[in-house]
Image 1 (cartoon, one colour):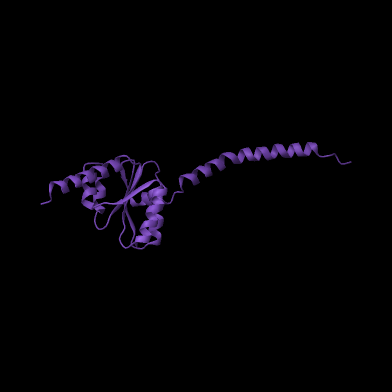
Image 2 (cartoon, rainbow, N blue to C red):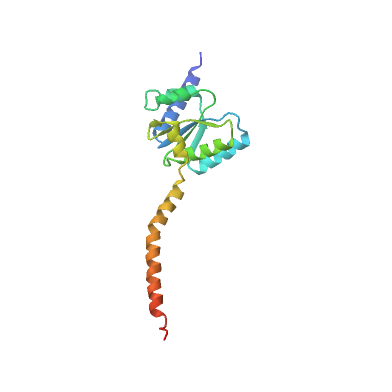
Length: 169
């Protein structure tokens, strides 16, 4: 029988995981077995730079954290090695980074994901992972808005240049 202090530590971890999930807009569960320490360190660095919190958590503790929530269906994938990545404000970062990493590492696999407190299918998770980053999307939108303005400016400049050109006899 575990001691009272061990049980208290586990309760605290469950509460922290539940709080992380509740305060995030998106999250991904992955099977991380078979990756080297160097690869894991590089992955963690990339996730941290993108504002994604990533940690290894025991399956039973994740199950307890999602028990009775809309994410309870994710319990089905909680076997083997599991890590959880959560993001407080970027819907795409965790899925994109982890999916790209999984492409290069055979044993590393995405297990499940969620958006706004609702579990999503693996198809949706893959679609989400293939979306461009927030910065890329913003630059695409900026280009769409600036293209007509730039075209108009070039047309006005062409008219001005034509008016200034000396008339040929």
